[in-house]
Image 1: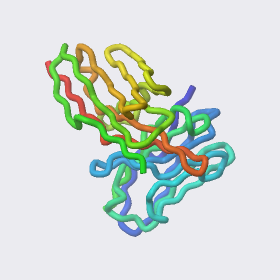
Image 2: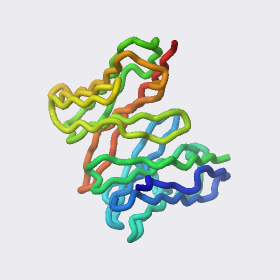
Image 3: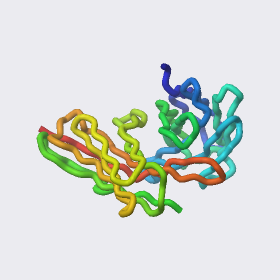
Image 4: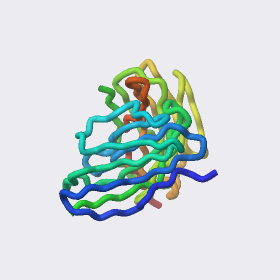
Length: 112
Length: 113
């Protein structure tokens, strides 16, 4: 069974640009969550989607947004990038959200 | 707000020794997870603990949960170099019928000869 996949794996952007990251969950998983990992703040929850609906949202500014498609694939978008957005962005999937979340390899975003 | 605290944050131990990592959390939760992260890699699920007194073991790692004390421990027995990694505990919270994992800061473990 294929695991969670994320594309791209690495991105370099400049301040003010926007970026879209993609996540394909494990087959059969309907819940997709996104997390930001930085050395200073650690792992922080961004949002969770289930059946194309955002069910939960973390404490991030509105520049961070996401969506989920009917095949459970998810995208997250960050607009007007700031230097502090440089991080590893991890996507996780699970059957329902309340069960074990399995993580993808992450997208490492560098903002210059 | 659910807070999760791990200690120690850094741990250097010799091969063959035993040690315990502690994870405290601030409010009641349904589930507690332990994950492992190798440098430059993603998170690998190790254990999920669902109820008070739950104990799970895999190889040299054993995790336990005390929901009354809001404490989980990850015990390492006879450490080997391959266990060098960062270990995170995480607790599930839910809001508006959605879920989120709340992570501790992680314990960076280095096992030396």
